[in-house]
Image 1 (spheres, rainbow, N blue to C red):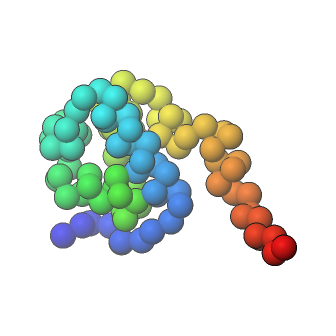
Image 2: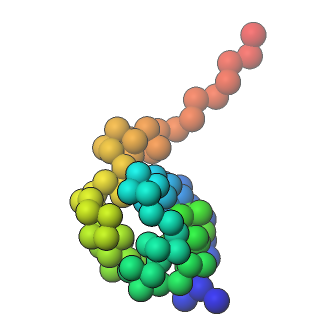
Length: 93
């Protein structure tokens, strides 16, 4: 089915959401993007959901197809810093 090990992490989920956002901004369907970069629709869906680890070659192909820098798929530095901060414990009153 999928050529890569299924795993879930915040990094894959963040990159997957970035791919989806960039694709939608361009008005492109999943099927169209998948066809243009030479992967299957289910594989692209797995990347966008953060269920699959995205190979560098696929990241480069997505960025090229959507005419954006690869760095945009990783989010802003601020987004990355916020994701790495520990979540504060709720205070009890």
